[in-house]
Amino acid sequence: MKRTGFKPRAHCREPRDPDRVRATPTVTPGAFRAPQSVVAAPVAAPKSAAHRNAHLREMARGMPCLLRVPGVCTQDRATVVCCHSNLSIHGKAGARKADDHYSVWGCAACHQWLDQGAAPRAQKAAAFMSAHLAQVLEWRAIAFDTNSSPRDRGAALWALGLLNATPGGNG
Image (cartoon, rainbow, N blue to C red; front, side):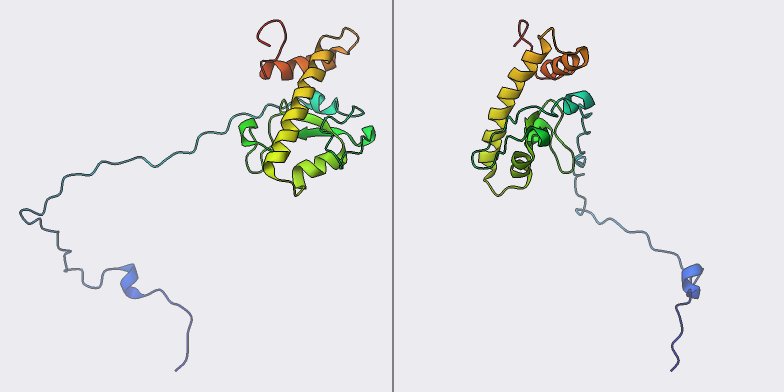
């Protein structure tokens, strides 16, 4: 028997018996069920807009490492970058980074430890939170130092405002 490719079947294009009528379902007495409540499918919450400030990230260059992980930190100012939090409470989710105001200055070695290191999650969270407190104090110093550039002061005030950490008002 010779095999052929798939061909559209005639009965798929038109009914086999045009005189045949589909039977309508009948309802027998006592078979009625009360309508069930319709529960809407859960809808994913819309993603919040990311808070980004390029100048705040650029300010990390040449600054001291604030993570200072014992046995890891090199204190090499040439490698210091803006290290974002890996905690979901700070906006981290999947491929989305945490917002820029949840970042700290960290050397390359500490940054690698924070993102890919084998340390327990709780230890990394504690190290980040400690460094973030130091970061807020650094941003406060920059924001209220009249010798700082206006762009640096503006970026620091932006981060402090989002954190409700500006002194004098609610900090």
